[in-house]
Length: 367
Ligand SMILES: Cc1cc2nc3c(=O)[nH]c(=O)nc-3n(C[C@H](O)[C@H](O)[C@H](O)COP(=O)(O)O)c2cc1C
View 1: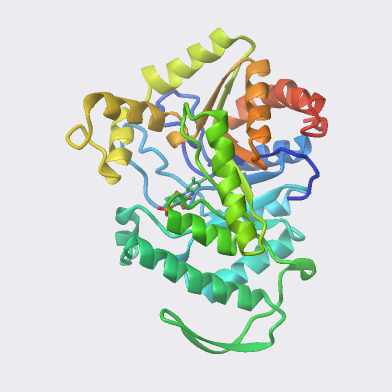
View 2: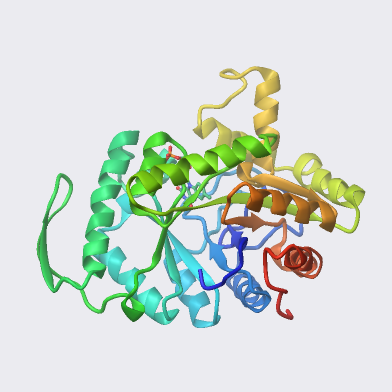
């Protein structure tokens, strides 16, 4: 992603209503196009490296129909790329829901619009209800990644200088494929994946430039560093290099007390608990399958940014925690806020200069 910053920053989930905060507070994120565009332009000016959308087709219900209104990610990326200058914008694409050659051409189009700034987040799917909407079947876990492998092989071939090619695999049988133009400037879009299982991570190591990995709340610095080192070592075994990123949820205020109060207000007192329970039930996490204590822990975690790492505190605390993530070997983090547009200016004014003083980033540009 076009910066030399040692810790890259992105914004995660802005294409969805409520973003990543499962809350009913009225200032929750709209996910509307005008708000997304203002946010992208603000992020671009500040030197934030990327925006990562969520590929979501069906809301999670609850009082807010959490993530019920979502902008399709590749068309969203095209719009944002046309109106920004430096930002990398990802499209998050469910491989099983779109033929690879259509997808490859969409990505190339987005990449040309953004002069090489489009990135692909490849997802295999994990919500059955969404697949039913398409009349598609969610394959079993291993087969999902076998399918994604062929799908991505086809996409990469379509991007390659190859003139015409055939492809014969278990899932695709293609003849005389011709795909022009090629990606912008003789490169190819960045590819990321967020597999959490060994199969998902092995897929990322084989195919992707970046793996997005969630860090469980409470996990130690040493354990995080070990996880990052393990993924990188796996990649090196195959002569590849992979960057590891994570996702975080920022509540940053002038004092620790104010930050904690706002966090509690949004994420505990006014969480959309019906939506939270719906999300957990899809993963078979219910009061019946888990002890009450564990169930409540998972509910709290889910309400706060769908399980992203909570970064709650004053600017010194948030900057310190971000420094620790960089020291653990992470290349970057995609963050979310309850309301991105309201909260990003304070983050840029207070946290980014602290990261610059630690030589993790350049000073932010004026918003
Ligand atoms: C940062 C991040 C972004 C993700 N984005 C999406 C998404 O937009 N749509 C989706 O269906 N799954 C998404 N996922 C789910 C992953 O692609 C993956 O399926 C999940 O982490 C489970 O890992 P596994 O497939 O290896 O079991 C995301 C996960 C993470 C951590």
